[in-house]
Amino acid sequence: NEKQTLFERIGESELHLLIERFYTHVQKHPDISDLFPEDMSETIRKQKQFLTQFSGGPDDYTMEHGHPMLRMRHMPFHIGEKEADAWLSCMHEALLESAIDIGTQQELYARLSHTAKHMINHQSDDR
Ligand code: HEM
Image 1 (cartoon, rainbow, N blue to C red):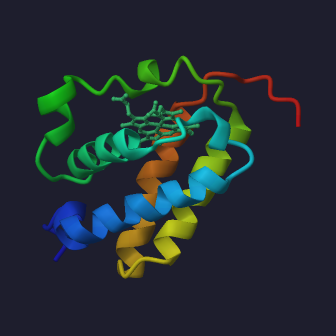
Image 2 (image 1 turned 60 degrees about the vertical axis):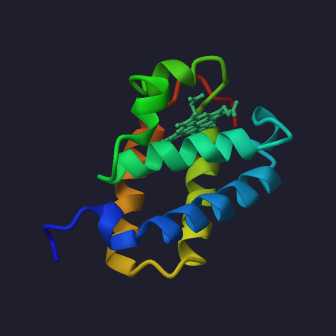
């Protein structure tokens, strides 16, 4: 049903699993693992809140933390094209491992690609 939100189509438990798998990949990715704390439990908790509201579910993130201001919250970290690509590849892997239907995966991935590109705060990336 196209009137359903992404959150309704994915379901909370599958969304949570997706995020847990995603951070397992992040933790192993040579281009971004060093940016994250060793204990990712708080990172995971906040990302569950954020992606819940991002996908059309309840505003869990804003209720606790206020306006997301995501780009600003990422300014302390060096994010070039390489880091954005790494983030997205971890998400792609986690989506492939999920039980989410392919159309919904593609829709979520497209929206996340857009947001990931928006997080880039270092343009001159020597690679
Ligand atoms: C926080 C990296 C893209 C959502 C963080 C943190 C890092 C990071 C290092 C801090 C983690 C912590 O201290 O616990 C990156 C990199 C990205 C990226 C390298 C590549 C483009 C995204 C995208 C989204 C997102 C696309 C959302 C769709 C968040 C949220 C937080 C966060 C909600 C928690 C903010 C808070 O402290 O309240 N990210 N991120 N990030 N990121 Fe990203």
